[in-house]
Image 1 (spheres, rainbow, N blue to C red):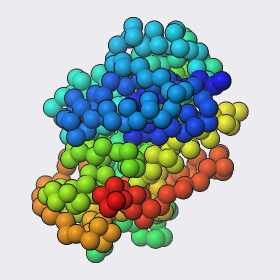
Image 2 (image 1 turned 90 degrees about the horizontal axis):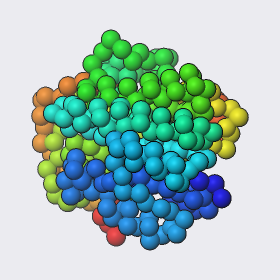
Image 3 (image 1 turned 120 degrees about the vertical axis):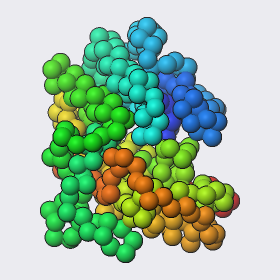
Image 4 (image 1 turned 30 degrees about the vertical axis):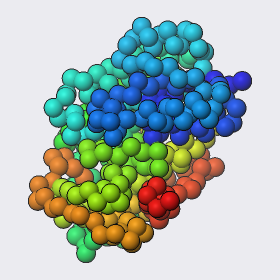
Length: 352
C-alpha cells in the first residue's frame, strides 16, 4: 500500500488531498494541530474537518503535531515512513496576521518548511514532494501591468500578451510582498534549492486564491469563502480599496489535489525544484463586486457592504495566473471547476 504524508491535513488543501488519496486506498498520515484556531479563533478551527476525516477513512492516521517541532517531525518520518508522496500544505496563510506576528509567521512558513525538507531528505528522499506555495511570492509585481479600469473590474486589454494570466517570468524581488509573502517566498526558495541542489523530486505550486466548501473563511483569510458566509449570514463585509474592482483568480482545492496527483503519476517528468503558477485563469476569476453580485443572485439576499478607501498594503489590483507551463508538461490535467460552479458550491452550504 502506498503511503503519503500530508501537512496541514485538516486544512482546505490538506483535507482535499487526504480524501483524494484515501479514496484511492492509500495509507495517509496527516499532520495538523489546528493552528488555525489560534490564528483566527473558533470560526477558523479545522477540528470538525479532522473528526470527519477520521470518521470517513480508516486508512487515515491523524498526528497532532506542530510542524515547528523538529524532533516530533523527525519521529513521524522515522516511525511512519518512508513515504511515497509528501504534500506540504501547512502554513500561516494571512497577509494581515503576519504584520503583527512576524516571528511566528516566519517560523511557520519558512523555518518549519526547512525542518520538513531536512526530514524528507534524510528519511524519505525517493518520495515525490509537493510544496504548496503562493502567488504572494511575487509581491505586488502584478500591479506594474498596464491595467485598465472597467465598470466592475481592473483588467488587461485583450491584446496584452499576459491577458490569459501571468506566467513564471514575473519577478520575485524589487517589490512589496507583505511579511506573509516574504515568509512564503523563503519556503518556496528552500524547496527549489532542495530540489535542484540535492536532485530531489520536488515540485512547487504557486496558486492565487484557493477555495472550496471545506474552507473555513475568516475576515483575514479565505476571501471567497468568507464573502459568501458574510452575505448569507447578514454580516457586514468590508471592501478594502480599489472600489472592490480588484480581481482574483480562484482555484478549487479539488483541482489542486488532482494537479498534485498528476505529478505523482508522472514522476518521470518531474524537473527537480520546478515551480508552476496554477490557478483558475480566465475560467475562474472574479472581482469582489462581481462575486458579491453573483452571490446575492444565488442566495436571494442583499449584501451588507462597507467600503474603505484604504487598500491593503501590497495588495493586488489584478491577479490571474496562467497554468500554461504546467499544462504543457502535464496535459492530462484539466480544471474541473469554473467560477460559477465554485460560487454555487459555496452558496449551497447556506441553502440546504
